[in-house]
Image 1: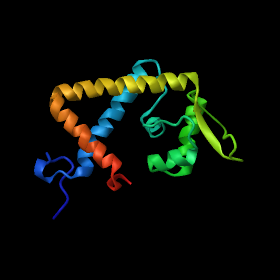
Image 2: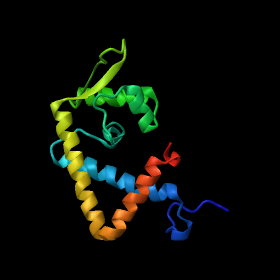
Image 3: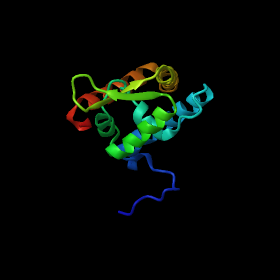
Length: 153
């Protein structure tokens, strides 16, 4: 069967789970960056979401962040260098771990990350209003089951 045209309106019965999860996630990331920019964090860009995504980078080694984001260590270190230069994070020696480094939020980084949580709470309220509280609770419960299952590993 040929791949669907990228400009064609998708048949809902043909939609695959990857797109059904990716498209809303991308929309949320774009909104987070737009609202962070509007709130004065105007130097953050969409690629920074690889670092700022849940559960956040504070106290985490760069290699773990790269694994979470599904990117190379080199790419993650470029993002960390960017965020460090912008004043959102610092990298320091991990206590009791030899040469290992960990990422720590600065005050500005903590403020931006707190704003991300506020934006996500707004998104949840809006989605709950759109879908209805019961359907939204079911959606979250099903996604949590996937999150906790081997399917998400």
